[in-house]
Image 1 (cartoon, one colour):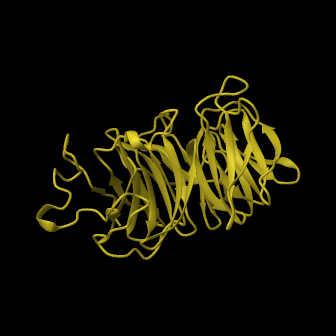
Image 2 (tube, helix red, strand yellow):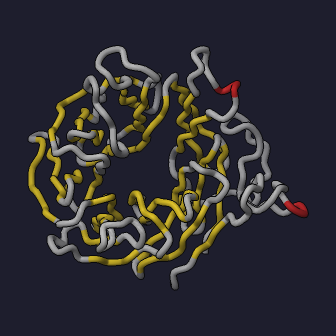
Amino acid sequence: MAERIESCAHLDGATFAWGEEVAPRGRPMANTWAGEFPWQDLKPRGWGTTPERPSFLAATLSAASDDLDANGVPRSRVVRVDGSQVVDVSDFKAQVISITEGEGARWALTRNPRATEGSLPDTFLKRIGPVGDPVSHQLPIDADPVGPIAAVGGAVWVPVRDGVVQFDAADGHLVRHLELRAAAHRWVALAGKGAYVTDGGALRRLDPALGLADRIDLGPEIMGLAARGFDGRVLVRNEQGGTDRARVADAFGGDPVHVVTTLPAGFHADGLESSATRMWATGTVDGAPAIVLLDDAGVHATVVFDNAPQATLVWSAPHTVTAVANGKLFELPVP
């Protein structure tokens, strides 16, 4: 399919991406959660039920004053959604900064508003099992997470500025801190038969028993790492070192990188994500949150979510992009 922009927003200053009315002439413009998310589901849902969903989504409700605790800290929730129903909600008295699922549980990385020791706010890994309350384990003092957590390859991995912190997948206890060169961003993903972490312009294999193992040098700085099945991909800057027209390359292609597709002009990439069957790049277009959907032929479509300076976008079903912004959940149709 030819590269194109499928944008849900072009109206500067409007209340909604498409104008001032939530449903002009009675027509829903996005599959928007009806009611107070996530507690109340009033239906109808615009395009009806959705065939496939991520098993859970994070919503940090900080826009309204009644969503603040006694200390003025925004409440955070991890919400599990099945079809059009909320399955369960986990409340946290801290900011949720990353979530994932794997190795038999759901996991959330949370940050407290202040430090009890050291100079950086305390950060905790929460294991959310099928029953019971979440179990919490603190990261090392002054650990500084710089990427999304990953539960793959027999462990749970938290990318931090000076390496990666390993937790046990069975009960969530801290195993070790593996040191790497300092980086402002870092990613972990299951690629091929093992878990890998980015280290500048290289990948390091993560062995849950031994720690850091094999090294694959790719050359340019890696901006993202994801895999769809056994197809590991890395996101690297353009040839001039910028984020516009960034490149997606084979994770195991070596140096020089084997580029498989170039992202659209005007899209400034900041990460690469995937599910078992889909892969997408995240970033911005003219400062607005955006997502580029990737298929075997290259770029499938680009979705831009205007009028929301911060939003989480996920390619949640073959023809659906799910967005969480300002405590509201939207579903956007794509070809």
